[in-house]
Length: 257
Image (tube, rainbow, N blue to C red):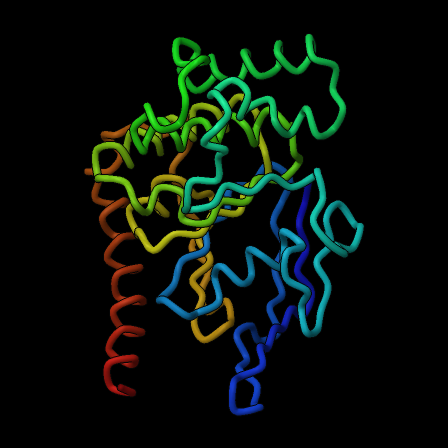
């Protein structure tokens, strides 16, 4: 499902009665089945833009179109994976994956079949009867991904989903996400601060600065992606370019402080 952003602006009221403008006239198109990563310094508007696409925040101006239809609120056509664990601690792994299907009224036998299929997809079929407290952070994240994919959204929205994980677990889940994404082919908008993660995952990278898309980087690597790709000179060149963009923002922020 393609996403079109038309003149997206967002301002928030401040305690002193003023307005803080976070997004400034963003125009962009994301193709059907494209994987786009949003990157930028803290406060640049990445998560706000993601939440506008999700329908969780209403823009101050502009329109988000999904497959030509305006977004007016949350919808089942979009699945969201948050940085925080968004799972129910009192439900088993299997019943967490079933939860969205249950809310939709999917019959018990059918939702069980779908949930089991998606647990196999993320490699957690042996943990179906476990509870979240018994799982590692990486495994809980797999449960969230399985639950989102089980609902079969057209668009996948991910807000720093691996940000709190250690490096090895993060890299493993990046590979797992791409493996699943290759099978499911969802239009994806992914927020991260991690330039290596952005380069490994994305078809295109949108660099945000002060609420605007400052730069668009086309990632030249074919799919499937491999771990070895991370050591290639072209990969390192993209990292250096992104690092320069973010370091410039960081220096500006320190100067302002």
